[in-house]
Length: 473
Ligand SMILES: NC(=O)C1=CN([C@@H]2O[C@H](COP(=O)(O)OP(=O)(O)OC[C@H]3O[C@@H](n4cnc5c(N)ncnc54)[C@H](O)[C@@H]3O)[C@@H](O)[C@H]2O)C=CC1
Ligand SMILES: O=C(O)[C@H]1O[C@H](OP(=O)(O)OP(=O)(O)OC[C@H]2O[C@@H](n3ccc(=O)[nH]c3=O)[C@H](O)[C@@H]2O)[C@H](O)[C@@H](O)[C@@H]1O
Picture 1 (spheres, rainbow, N blue to C red):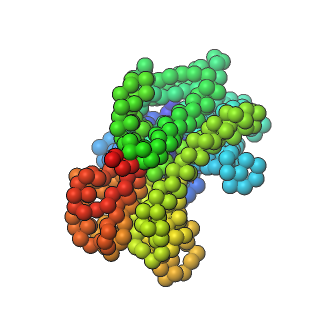
Picture 2 (picture 1 turned 120 degrees about the vertical axis):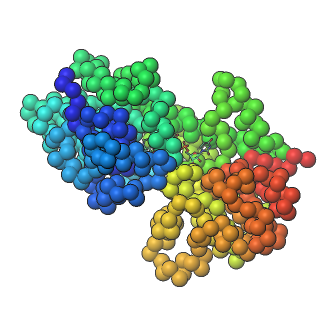
Picture 3 (picture 1 turned 90 degrees about the vertical axis):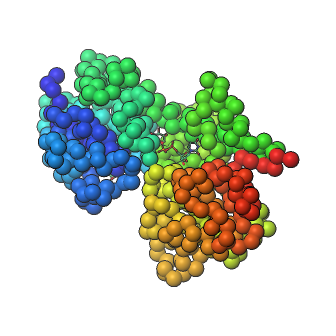
């Protein structure tokens, strides 16, 4: 096969942007274009105010995009069709959110954006093209793509479909892309399929060691992505289920996770008990897997995976109930300070953040909620709380946004930590002594992330309640 000259990423989101940037950085001879329908998103990618907050990303983008230290080979553009025409390889990185209406609503992925991208490639490609599924998709999506490509593609143009799921986590995207645990490439086990897999492996080979590039059949690769997210989410639901037992018995879930995690068969990662996992993918992908099992007439399997999501929902409401009962059964008129709104630290992404459910429950109790997050914008919080259409004066009767943790906590009855930003752990920036002075009495801290040094706060006079920690006496 001729050397790859031009590569296109469709979808300039959390995956397409950083993946395209790192591929461009590591393959200076390849022209990499990241395309999107959204003009504002592309304009932001072409500026220094990138559309996503991701540590270490701007220097990577600038090096490949700005032609200051080397020739430019990274381009962000809305010219989707023109870019497809030139590309030897097209990565589809569009969103595949959970369906909100119709058959499978609330469970099945909405494949409309993915199919529309496939159709666009079929219609525009003028020479043989490798199409890469990078979005997370149901197993056997490539079979549907093959039919569309055959029916819509130009005569004489051959397509090869590969599955190359993305495993990056937000907040560590650059590090994950630079040093991935593995690159998974699934292909049809035909000579042309295997050859296409080799072409893609060579692109990654410019920075990923060969032994970390895994080639499988295409269905395994598609399913492995859903499996990986389901297994990770399952670990969190497992430790969160144990956190409830800890609170009732006086055991400490941190000690449980540590003791269990030392068993090399279990391992220590993804065992941090929390107020519940969030993010755009865990819930979506577990439900996707569960729905697939349902459609394959495997109801027991579907119910098993569904329970991972059910425990997560329960964990969020369990946490809020603990806040309410500890605050003497009523939040009416009490100011509650919420620290953190993003679904995890080092990202401004709020999709499926546990904070959304918790804050909505607090509002339902007529609390006056004040939110502080170091990165999430006010507009983003309003949007997530679905209070966009309301008159601002009415909204601000029950939700306010603070610019710093002190204004947030001032005159509050409780501080609730919902995101594990480093500045909230008392080793770091927030001065908890000062916070104590400006709060009502008794001053409560509810730690939904286990980042607070509870002993130290108790010595300052706080009443502290942590996920997964009950009364040890
Ligand atoms: N966010 C994450 O950390 C990860 C996401 N994934 C998967 O990657 C996929 C993308 O996720 P995100 O990047 O988070 O989504 P996103 O919503 O941030 O970005 C998707 C982009 O695709 C664009 N788009 C949709 N249809 C298009 C079309 N026909 N032509 C051009 N652009 C189009 C949208 O405008 C949007 O900017 C999903 O399937 C997700 O499950 C996988 C690993 C990590
Ligand atoms: O497909 C995806 O989108 C990605 O989903 C997750 O990445 P991400 O959601 O960005 O972040 P994680 O670090 O996995 O955290 C997810 C949620 O679980 C929570 N979490 C994580 C770990 C833990 O031990 N406990 C816990 O509650 C986090 O706070 C966060 O709310 C996976 O980790 C990635 O491998 C995957 O590519």
